[in-house]
Length: 166
Image 1 (cartoon, rainbow, N blue to C red):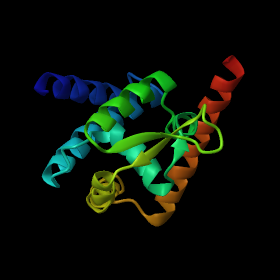
Image 2: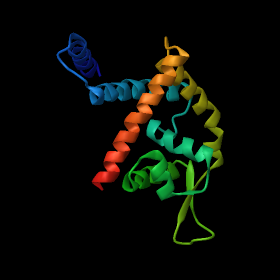
Image 3: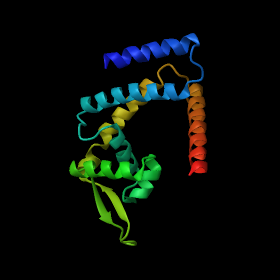
Image 4: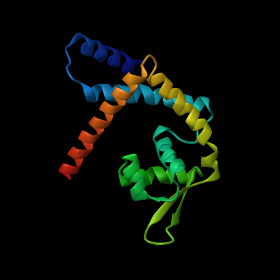
């Protein structure tokens, strides 16, 4: 981990010195790496070792609405069906989710939450709140709104590009 940190520091110096220009992908990658490390550590601190960050994203979606199809979960999470299926297999083995047939369309498989998963929601929300506070430390409300607006625009650009390529 120290080696990655040193390389990240060197890369940040290059970016700050102007040797690297408009490195949005690089910056987002760094945000994901640092944020992921902190998030995983917080999950452990809160005693939520049952799942990792990406699985938390799936649980978050299911906490909002249970009994959705794998395809809908894939769309909402941005995960490919194959990736999602293997993650759901692991989460099912940990007794966090279960699969059941759709009453209206037996060809569809719906994903539901177990009581164990429901019991973790409050702790997960606390971790998410702490992460949000860390990300936005020192930002004004106006800066937060502006940043989130610009990030949504970037996401829309990428989605539009992906749809046009498929």
